[in-house]
Length: 366
Image (cartoon, rainbow, N blue to C red; front, top):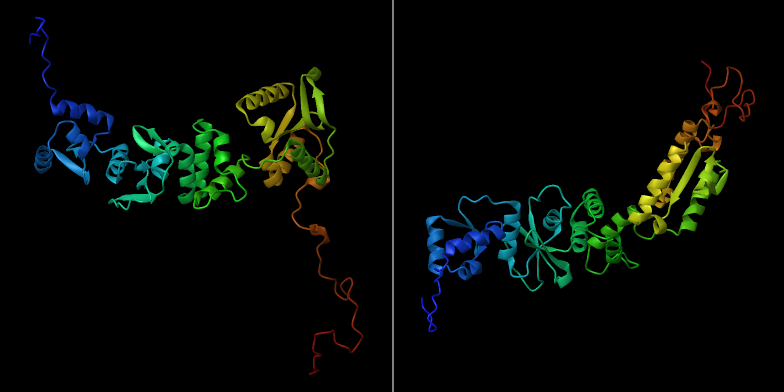
């Protein structure tokens, strides 16, 4: 082609729709929606011919996959989102898997659609909710609920063990901040009206000490009262060791320290790193360190007591008598034994001769 200025311009041949299709399928897990096919240059007649010839096969109405292509879990979820509408979003277990919170893809696809939508899809569970823009993200190229909303939704349908695993993975991988989770469940009722999962999510966070932790002084007072109830009198509190470089929350006995970790000053990554460094240094000096957080102090005090008793044995110190586990309210030696023949039981007055004991009928002589 030559322009009016006499310059030659190379002519680029029109790109074939199949070339554009291949490029598009690499971005959409091999799934193609009807509007996308039209945008790529396929006519409605061409689409129908390919379906009739078996070159494409439908996953849902208006959603196709190339025949012979492997349908991955991502493809199934993305196809459900395409078929459910323009703002349909993977949610609940489907979203949890896309976020990496579950090890295996769910057997059932779950998507959230607007409340005004009444669309039903075979093999897909739909939830109706008007998501805010900040609650929709993209994971693996699929519209997905945000991590906080995903955990909130998962809490409504998953057992506590599955929810706990998802929360642990989210926090460990750093895909969500503690502040974002605690803000999501903030409020006196533990959640907002109409969100059944928020209460369960709040319970999962409470079990980890992320919601309503006591102040450090309250926690230390609680631990001090526990020690007293077990007959343990520490040698000191806030004891400086190693030339003043470190301080022990409680020096229980010589060579045994009890460290109390409140949430306020010990939850950040920097604080955890310093705590680990300090305790490694104490252990290198020969100090046995027992660690306690507020969940243990408030909800599992018996575990703390058992840990302390084991530490007493480790340092060779005699454990306090009152902290030993009581198997019964009375010792076996004090159990009532049968009275010897001819001797009445202690505390029981013998019956006068010829007079039956109360509640016992006299026996007639033969």
